[in-house]
Amino acid sequence: MGQPRFSYDEKTPVPAGLDEAEQQSVMLKALKQRGGLHNGEELTAVPSGTPPLPGWTPVQTITAPSGKPYRVYMKFPGGHGHGPLGSRHNKPKGDKGTMPRTEHKPSKSTGRPLEPPPTEKPKPVETPPQNVWLGSKESDKVGELTEQLKDVISDPGATEKEITDAVQKAIGAARQLALMGGEDDPRMEALWEQVNEAIELMSETRNSDFESVLRKEKLSPGSQSESTIKEHLQKALGDMRQRQLMGSSQDGKEFQRTQELIDKGITALADRQADRIDDVLKRAKAPGSTVTDKQLSDTVGELFGLARSLELMGVSRQKAQKAMGDMDGALLEMVRRKTESRNNMIKHRALPDSGVSDADVERAQAELEMLKEQVRRLGITVP
Image (tube, rainbow, N blue to C red; front, side):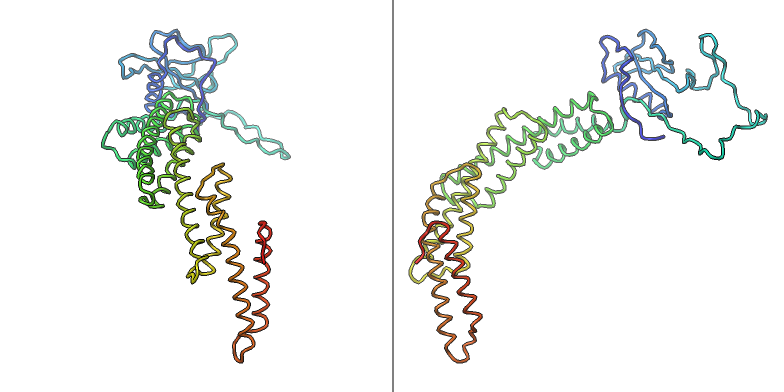
């Protein structure tokens, strides 16, 4: 049997006060008892006492977990199919002009079968799509994982990893059921309610931890490592992204709290980075500096990156601005060092066996001119 396509029969009247979750449970039970459906067959169930469904054949009665009896109905392709006891019947329709279905007996000849003309190919037999309710396996899995997630959330000793794992399993099962056409399954709504509650719980816990780290950093600058701040920042950004993908409301308390903590975390890292850059620039300008050319060049590049990031985020930090103010001196120091290095190379070239070639001097001169041009573009006067 091919993969069924799940849908509801909109033409079938819905009994008043129908409990769809209970109805669906009964239908899944009937589907399991019958071993699935054949091509073109349809199945539904309604509470016993409901007027007969037009065009449907009653096949059995099943008692729901609540004790309420349900009458199971089916539709068969061609108007024939299993009777109430599962045996085949050959009764004609009640309307006039309907002939009984003729049984084919292999022991008797029924005439020569028609053959298609030689020039025509037999048309392939198309299997009609199946209309059933929801696949029992996927729907049952959603209900099972919903209960597991509910238990984890209500457990005060549950770890963040346990909650995260339960949420991921639940979302995976929901996506699988949705791919099979079960978006309207009542169990889906219950599952997403638990998922949202779990995400809210994790956000609250993570926000509290992040808030504690930032408070300690503010009271004692440098007390928290950059890796710790970045770890909590990444978790907060992940929570924001997940909420956006799920279409969650952005007006909630924890959502707003997460946004504020992200802003504070970014500025804390920016201040830390600006302090480090400023320290290198100051040491580079001091007499007898041990800061290498590479360290100075890397620091200037890092400062440009920091300034660009803050600009894109619309954030202004005093420490970053101070570091930018010291950058003029740092760039001129780089020009001075390059000039000194070029001059020393020219002197050594004149010595016998110095190993300095004309090509080395030309390369040093080209690098110096390139640096001067870059500094001039920033509006800095180069001697």
